[in-house]
Image (tube, rainbow, N blue to C red; front, side, top):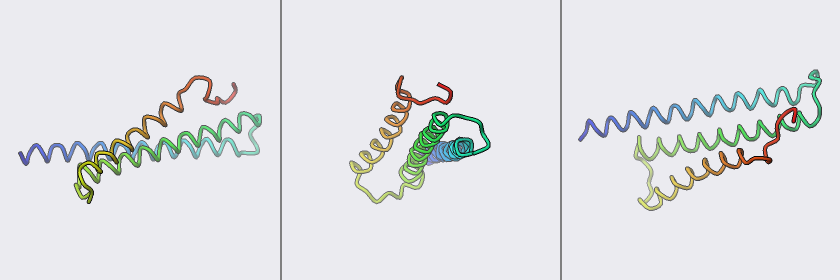
Length: 118
């Protein structure tokens, strides 16, 4: 039984590291979008600049959601240090997970996403 728990802890730790790495990558992409949007030497329209800013906000929102989910997995599954009752832990985990789903879906609704050059 200890081997199984250790296996799950290692697996959850790997998933947490992947969430953090993906969030850092998204933050880097968001900074790159902002750099292009605010670069006065770029010959792009105001609409494209605004699209770049919105894209960076979208990327940062998803990065925060990924960090939150990684933190939840680390606290609840690896360290098991959350000082909450079981129903509260489940509710918190599901609410953070639903946040990720809602943010992802909101960014994929056709006609709502501003694209550069569109």
